[in-house]
Amino acid sequence: MTPLELVSYILEFLSLLFLIPTNIFILMVNLLTWIKENKFSQVEQLIISISVCNIVEKMMEFIWFLNIIYNIPVMTKNYFALGFLAMSCNVWFSTFLCVYFCLKIVNVKNTLYICLQRNFQKILPWLFVSAILGSVLVSVPFILKITEENSLNSGFNISLNMQTLAIVTSLIKHMNHVQENIGGFRSPNMKVHVQALRTVILFLITNIIIFIVLTVNLTSPGNIWSYVIIHFYNLSKMTGCWSIIKGNRNLDKTLRNIFSKLHCTNTSNDIE
Image (cartoon, rainbow, N blue to C red; front, side, top):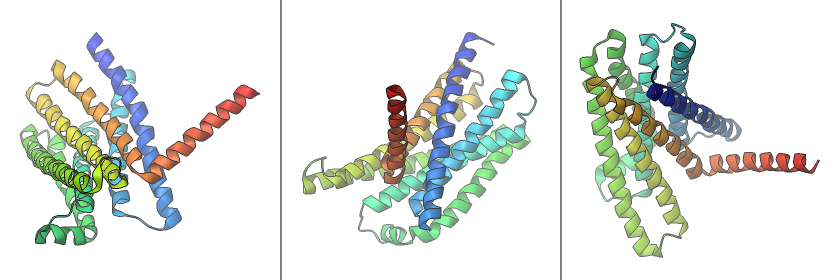
């Protein structure tokens, strides 16, 4: 094992220590809210879906670590396929969340856009099914060792990145319009829009990095850049999860309560 690989594995493991507990926290808080209030909003469905994909993807990486450390032959192509399936679904679900933010915030006088605004809740289950089926189709090459078909996933990724970029542009234009009418970035509406835009941009960056990772691994496997890019991917993942928490009132409040209780416990222990 080279020093570069060792450093890369350590950084990868540290990202797992952050991402797995964070996504479990996001998942559990939303599930408990659903059970308590008996309501399951669109944004909660999307956030839960993204969290589940992140957990599955990172658990596959954890199994991969066990394979490296203890030389356990468990990391078969089926595990790779499952991890890739979770990554692909994550790209779709992140894009759906970006579309949701755009539909919720930006108002456009267009018949198709208005129709999508009104019916997004109805078509969301079908979007989930389509995303999962599409992800399964692009994950099959990993099982069959047909790398040529991986270009299909790259095409999907480019398409989704272009859609997300268009959403970012629309949100920026809308924010400028709101700023002119309301007056400044300090208004509550503007803060909501800024948080939504920040989340969308982070998802766009993550999707672009996924595309770069796939391209580098297909064209130059084992290249030094593949080690570097994967850490940018993990960093964007961590920032995206943090943005989801800070942008969701329930998640942010729960996290603050946990930190507050931990601080009180530490203070009381110091006094004793």
